[in-house]
Length: 415
Ligand code: FAD
Ligand code: PYC
Image 1: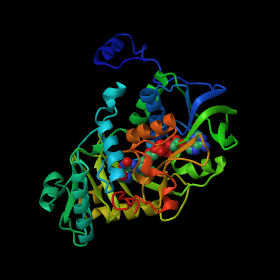
Image 2: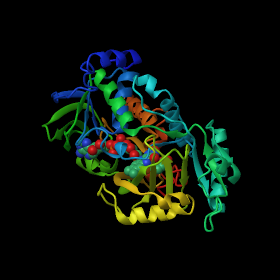
Image 3: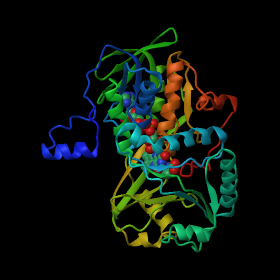
């Protein structure tokens, strides 16, 4: 793998940039692999990466029906935070946030992690109590957050109107080391590192069936032919129900569209991320100057993977009271992704009814931030055959046993 450095840029500048090479190799399927990961989103790629890096398993194929990172990983608004309420969540999200801090160095590839600070506005007394509770829980979990006053909110984000008539800002849950990252670069960085370890990333390779014998997966049917495997990981977000169905079991997840939009680029006016969960809107400014805006999920299950007009209207209307300046902005584009939501708004990292088949899903509206930690934990489960400490509470069977990990407040846009 070519190392990226200032020296490499200078050398390539002198040789017409002919020496860069591909970031990852185009592969053709082998007949068999030790591990097949279905889904080349961030979670699938990170799982493969940590299988190689932490467990020395590199005879791995990552199968993607479209292009890598083209699902939710390439469609999200890139907010990274770990201000969750319950202990198992705080552990995995904080592991993830801390891995983000050094991911660029780990990859030798810039994922543009920007710990600019994330605030979740409290705009009702109910939210004040909820976020104060989270700040106290985070203190016990070694997650650094604080509940801040409206004056401090205004100081951190001067374009905010804190005196709105319907929803004045009463305070905020502030995580100074939360922020954003570059979503495509996260997928590309993992892909490049997986390819360098000799793994095959098979794009345009849709899994259409799962072969099993005596409760064991033996391989998959794909649009490029059958491929055998010793172990299989299903990491397909909004399509988890479909692939689980091919494997013969059901998952407690619903698929629903989540949408976002960006404005025309403007001069820098906001250097923090603001989430306003009561009105269902959140905003940050991208490096290009666009205001990145998102709202709540669609109110009905669907697989549309596109934006809709009513969503723009609702989201922008909701945000204008708190950010009056956006009423004068032109919007450039909108899009949607199919997110996989569980009943307690927490993910599933789990064994399944098939002995050597594992599932990672249910990240819903909030899984970009979790990519490194989730990949770390899922790789450990696939390698050892049992979930480790970061994953063990996230079994799919918790719904049957009533052991919910309720994150409906922390999930914000998914309540
Ligand atoms: P994906 O990236 O969707 O990857 C799954 C892959 O599986 C896809 O590429 C798909 O093509 C592939 N696949 C599906 N079926 C098959 C098959 N049969 N065969 C082969 N491949 C298959 N999270 C945050 O933390 N912060 C945010 O700010 C944030 N904002 C969001 C905003 C929007 C608009 C959306 C849609 C999501 C947002 N999220 C956010 C959530 C986050 O994007 C997801 O939780 C995360 O990207 C999920 O990653 P993944 O790898 O599990 O799924
Ligand atoms: O989980 O922080 C989040 C988030 C923000 C927007 C969508 N999800």
